[in-house]
Image: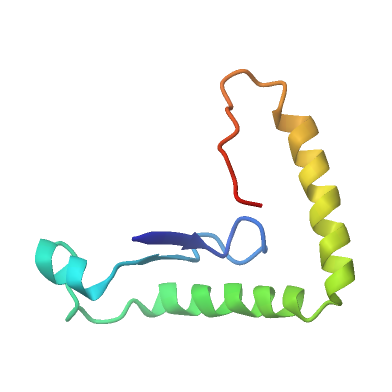
Length: 92
């Protein structure tokens, strides 16, 4: 399963996220009904989040790389001093 959000980093509407569940897992557990009526409010929020992501991806790659580097440095400076936060290993 993979939980994704469009409302944190990319500035989409609140609660614009999704839980991607492999069909095999959903069928086996029975906890993820696949026949429910769609939640149109959630779908519209997700579409707005995707529009924010598309706008971000339309920027030149070098600009996004620079932005991500600055964001990362500032994030680490703000959160690193907090003892309760631990850095998890990352392949990047």
